[in-house]
Length: 182
Image (cartoon, rainbow, N blue to C red):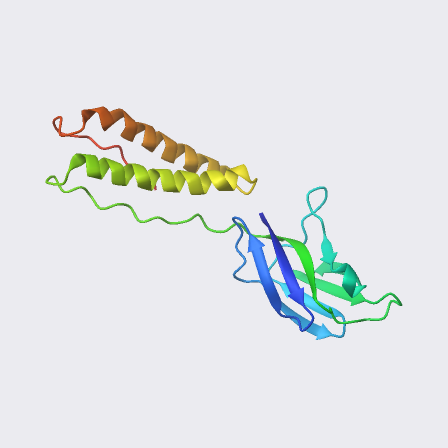
């Protein structure tokens, strides 16, 4: 599971959804009635101690409460007299969402034996660096899964293999390139 922040407007529309590593494609919001909004496509709210619940704009002078039942988050907003009121600006919710699928990267083309081997090395190394950085970022911010950690280790092993043959360049015989991870 991943964390996301969603901003809901008074008409029930979504202002934006922010996440690192979460799948937010299925999230939908709608206004049901005055001061009542539904959010679907989430796994509920982020629980304490990490979850911060809802945030309302102090200028709006509203209170927000939530229920989660049958995979639907229901947001209720009321004014200072406890009367239902539509959101004047926006309300932010700290929600749980499924993990996004791992990013897919196109493998660099197989090297042509006539290509400059140093160029092939640089391309493969740059590709490995980009994949490692993307996966490591997820781990660093606490959004990485056990699968993410395994993938980053596989890519780091691949990069080490590339570095071990770098001293053979340029053209010191037949280069046995390490196998790129899936």
